[in-house]
Image (cartoon, rainbow, N blue to C red; front, side):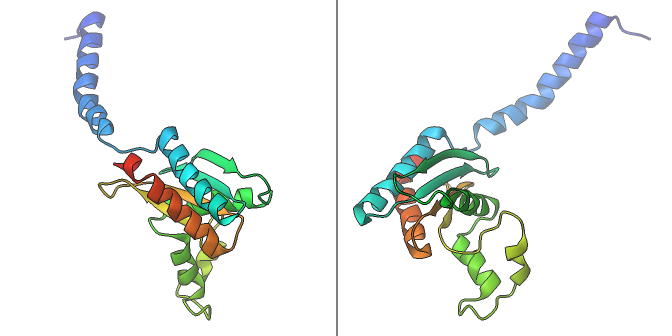
Length: 170
């Protein structure tokens, strides 16, 4: 028996609503990186950089490694823009600091790591300055990458950004 088109359409719509409603509800509960939060993280990083007289490029990306916010401080190296982005993307794609990638690739003593080929993956950065962004309930929601100083300065600056944005990550 063939149903009239209007009944078929209504039935299809009801099935779709019933199927998609739980998915839509689940999306409401997923913590995502907002532009406002990204700006707070960058502001915390910038404050630390100014305090230390560092000139930094700061990139904040979401869990898909898509850049949400970028800031180039006055006097920061132009070439460090891409490095900051790739540090942020590395820490968004993998839930650990880029310093850990460095240790995997080169070893803690820089005499060879357990995964040397990891550094050859396009977009992966194997030196400090990128940190994962975790929500208060420990959900990996993005990465922050900083470049313009030494690797240690970059990482210190990124950590200052995370510390400054801690309330926004709740």
